[in-house]
Length: 299
Ligand code: BG6
Image (cartoon, rainbow, N blue to C red):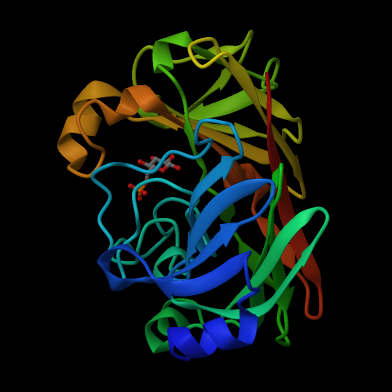
């Protein structure tokens, strides 16, 4: 990866977008425009913050997050790819794939009346190639505006078909988890990781009063986080994704994890747009697929 000053000269946009050193010395993109402020680490193309003007932060970043080369950051939007969760056969490979801990390149930036656009591309190192020896191009296209849009584009540039699991593993900031409900998943089936991956049916809205780790399958619906404490609704619209994962570790796991902050579980909820388990995606040679999300706040 080129040095951060060089990236700034090439892709910085005066008054809107700059590249510099962030927490732990990790290079970051900083956006401040008429709509919002945001920070994105180049490691993992990991969006750390997004705060529309006049609004409380929409994305949760743990106050105890660790920033170090090759380590995933607790909070923000980890990019899980090319597998979701534990690797199917190699327990020593990193959970949720290698994309979230590799350094990505910046390949384009622009600004217009919808916001600031940045395109990141992953060129894997030898470790990643050893774990997943496929030929591909992977890009994350981000737009920082009054809404936050992200598109994860996978292109199969090899001669053989391959399958991927993927997720935009977004940690949303909530006022208090006890005052939150998620709509949009009614009448769908989910695999419950807390109960041995058994399959259950979702009846009404999702509410969280204990550990929740659910993989909702075959659902393309928009979800809404109703947050009575902050008096707002966060909309989560998606395309190219048939799985939605809802995760909150609750008190005990939160305390064990060590990077959640004290009672951090009360102020976050992951609603992840994904293709996982029943919905892993197969790409033929030459094929491209995009999984995209759009988040916005309504009061
Ligand atoms: C969720 C999984 O997507 O991510 C959970 O469903 C997991 O099982 C969580 O605990 C956090 O994963 P990690 O690897 O970032 O600690």
